[in-house]
Image (tube, rainbow, N blue to C red):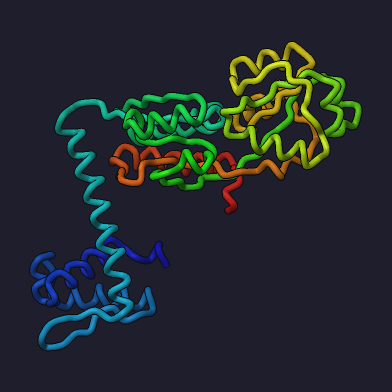
Length: 309
């Protein structure tokens, strides 16, 4: 249905609502009244609902028309906002800037590919990207230093006055070097007690998930060698030692795909959690941020990430 609705349908309908007269609306849009009537009839046939009641005194909205008018007007307003933003970029000749923050799991796997797509859509823009622990990134968002944060849903106390839009679901993996002895031994969760572990620190978004997962499998505190979510450290240390790295899948997405690291065959579905977009509730995305979100959505689909709610 959405593909059949065209911009001309929305424009004719919203103008008819504003003018309360098909003749006046047609004049405003430089259309003939028969053309205006035909377009509105097409829209009603697509929706399967009568939107306008036409009388000699003018037009009025049906209940369905009241509902549709609200969202139609919002759609046109959003489109106008985006076009104005692009026009301003062209007028100033300045490079647009999008400032965002990303947790390590997003910064390593999804974000580089989304940036490639964004550069294709808006090559004149500059992205300013910050990564780090979730509490630090949320503070940057509240202070206005960044316009959005990409990552896992934080603790409720961190989320006050922020909106969260889920993008996809992600699990935590137990990762080792490709020739690790555990890979050929039919490992069980309790076996991690015999090996050094890279463990998420207390401030990490995945720490509570990992703790509940281990408790649920009757595993006590592992032999923690290092507490960190640093991708740079974890990749090297894991490849050069017998350590088991407990980390979000997105951080090691590339290494797993290319065989430079391997995941232990544990069912970690209990650690699945939402990864999404954090914004201030009072903020509206700029035209450039809207294009970045489009690039992000397209990249998520191309990577086959789990978008189930």
